Amino acid sequence: MSTRTRALNAAIDVVGHDGVRALTHARVDAAAGLPRGSTSNHFRTRAALVAGVIAHLAEQERADGGNPRIRTEDELIAALIAMIEAQSGLLATRTRARYALFLEADPDAAAPMHEQRAAFEEWTSGILSSLGGPAAAERTPFLMASCEGLLLHRLTVDPGAPVAASIALAVRTAVHDNTGAPQDNQPPQG
Image (cartoon, rainbow, N blue to C red; front, side):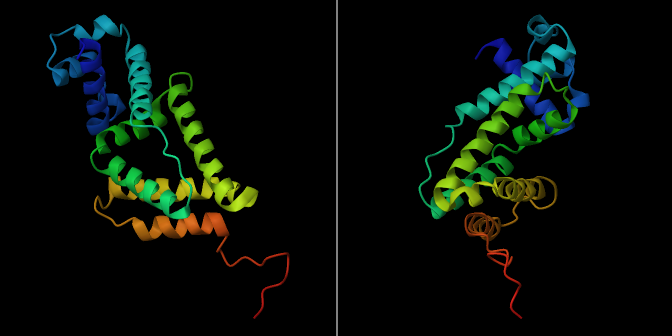
């Protein structure tokens, strides 16, 4: 593994454990077990280091295997459960780093994360559209917010919180609009 990659991986760990403000060249060198000054050889300024970490995060997420092909509600439910469990388990440090960088990075530096987010949103919308039509695709923000809320809950409150039932409900609601809203502008029966 190259010195640059070691530094970037260590930087993700620093941000994921201690936040963006802890991100310094010296902390990254120490966390990566690199000689002092190694990180600054690749990233001359802190802004360059932040931008490098963001680009590396987006690269890692793309390398995770992309977005699987989904043909059924059950496949979507299983894929979202697996993503949340991975992002709040094995990849929790990286997820915390992503959230911290989303909140702290300037818009130009955060562009790769926003592009990654837009691609995931497009993937989700396409699946909802194929499963439930245009109305379902319009509920993409609801489904994504539901998943993000569960992920944040696991990262901050309860790492082992069950997610399967909530994900299943969110997917089925997004696909079928099981919200109890009156259909065809008819008043509720009651």
